[in-house]
Length: 113
Image 1 (cartoon, rainbow, N blue to C red):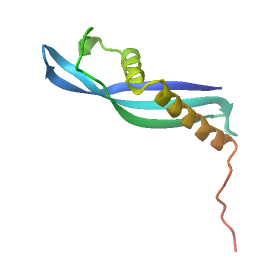
Image 2 (cartoon, rainbow, N blue to C red; image 1 turned 180 degrees about the horizontal axis):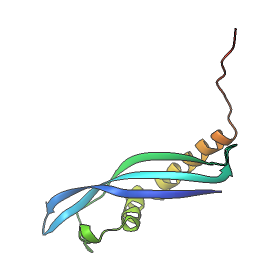
Image 3 (cartoon, rainbow, N blue to C red; image 1 turned 180 degrees about the vertical axis):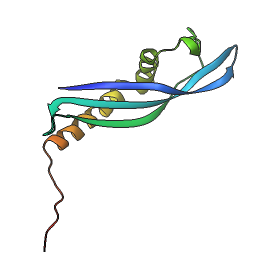
Image 4 (cartoon, rainbow, N blue to C red; image 1 turned 120 degrees about the vertical axis):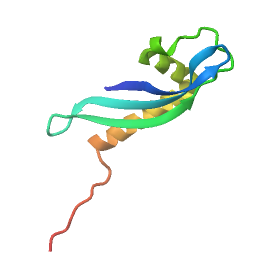
């Protein structure tokens, strides 16, 4: 099983947008998948993917001041802006990369003389 951690704590903001201050418009996301399987040193297999997601600021109905914004809330905004398919693609890609770490299809070796 893989657990996914979404870190959306780094954001770009417009200093002013209409009547609001520090309006989040872009999220720098980091998604880390951690497997419950471990390597020979007992470390769980993990893979991280990073990117950005633009958020629409055209219709702000429930504005939250930046001092009250939480990672959980920004993750929700980010996933909504991405759409379910893109979220699934990111998590599936991480899962595939972890599976390749566990069961590699290719390895690099050095030949001695």
